Length: 336
Image (tube, rainbow, N blue to C red; front, side, top):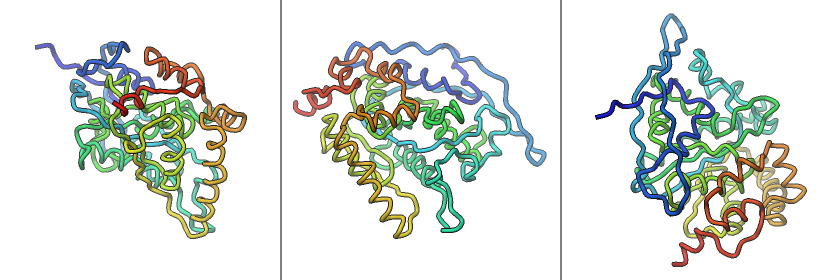
């Protein structure tokens, strides 16, 4: 028997490519080549000293990846960036519960005057809800979790939102005593957590995650669960899903809102209708002046996004460049 392959000490920013392109045990549904993963080499342990104790990321065996029986997609939409460097020896000292360890927009930050808590607490709740679907409940054992979010703050960091959420999950596990990353590390190494690092808005969170699932498992998902803010449910269920012809009975939203007062609740919902829903009703693919400019400001790049559709159905490639398409592979499958 061939020896098992040891993992890297901590996955770095290019590691998701090997996960996404690794061969699955299920035969692909069409001719999309899944690239062989390069051999992973062991690295030296990382160590840091805290109160006289040594922290080690020790090498461990990566189990073989299998997508047999996997049919459901769980998407966690990312909204900010947890910025500590996961490859640094001091990484375990940076708690994801500390607001200072996140790059947040002004409206996401805490406000001592009004006693508004920081929204990074909600992002951790989204992450944990996503992890829970993989090993508890009716979707356990038949789902993939995709953390979706691109490099939206290039002036501050080259780190993607998706990568940073995974790092936050690692840091949280370490804070609970799991020195090697605990549950998120185990699930990531098994290929049950994937990172979608191109999306810059909610439409792309949905579409790009569907395509990454297809490229990884060889099939399109049977059911989708989107974990995001509850106030965004209508945007996904009534705008994005219909626009890409995703069947209405095969997508649900698990909404977890930030902690809000009545004034904040009313303001948030009014803002979602005006700025979150109305622009998408006018421009469903997000390619017009307003939404297209927002994508550019958030670092959207055409080429990496187009690569998600490479080798897939022609209708998918057309959709990726903003064309309306009569039939898409998932809508055809649903009608059979």
